View 1 (spheres, helix red, strand yellow):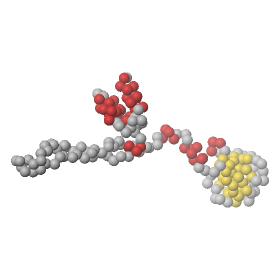
View 2 (cartoon, rainbow, N blue to C red):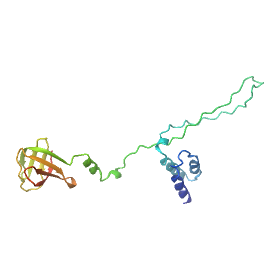
View 3 (cartoon, one colour):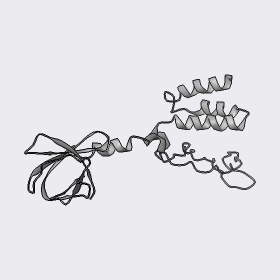
Length: 190
């Protein structure tokens, strides 16, 4: 439990000291359990800012050559030795994961987002009117859309009338004519 509290306190300080991760990495490396150690590393990686995650991957460590003693001229070989200069290691790269949207996060709001991008009402002219077997109106509009009446009430419309289709609650649509103050519920069939 102490390790978890310590790791949580350590992770809270990561954003402020993200430039020097050496102490935090040492703490993670000191953990004895492999699962705790991996979790510690993952939490450190999650707390990094984006600019540190975009750095290139470090080069794999190369075996260090044995240092040569510096002497001006070796009397036995007559060869002048040069000091070995190791290249600076590249900063550590943390694997970035592509953020896949979780289906649970979008559950129930996908319909709301589609409504925001569409118009709340449109207007069109009636090109023809038909009736179903049950007496419901089928309205063909000049923009190519076909709508059917939900109820069985008489709704006075004529060919050529201008109508306004407004969006209602729960994905319903209402027709209103410029000749009348009534609204009637319709649904689109084409």
